[in-house]
Length: 154
Image 1 (cartoon, one colour):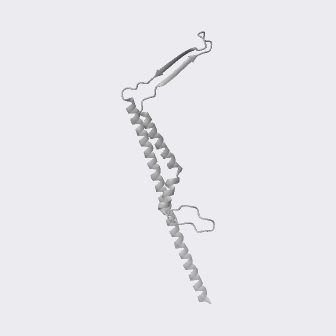
Image 2: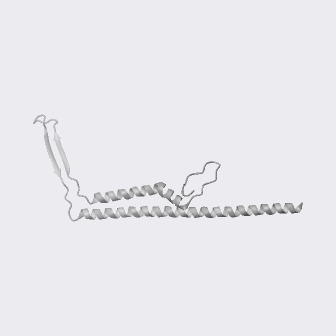
Image 3: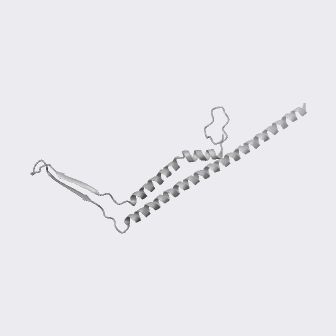
């Protein structure tokens, strides 16, 4: 009891689940929430990357095959760097930040949906359990009334 959510052993009564325990288990084990949390991390990483200046590109080109100049061949190296102007990095960062915000909202939506589903199912279970208890009481009363009637007929 008290929050542990393990299946009952064979031949034993089912354990009493607490709402807090079910919520903790649901939040901790739901693969959809884990996937949404990874999407948030990914979107935040893209947002950081979107604001960074592009890396320089280094190229080393050479030709040794059929080269008349000898075994060294002809080699050339170039370094290029993209120049970003007009605050394009800021715009990219802002757009990626909105995507990260959307991923956070998706995570929260999934979390609240899960919490609502768990609570709804829990209270449905409590209502069904209460109905079972009432029906068992009625069956007991009917059996006692039947026994009393049979004793009175003897």
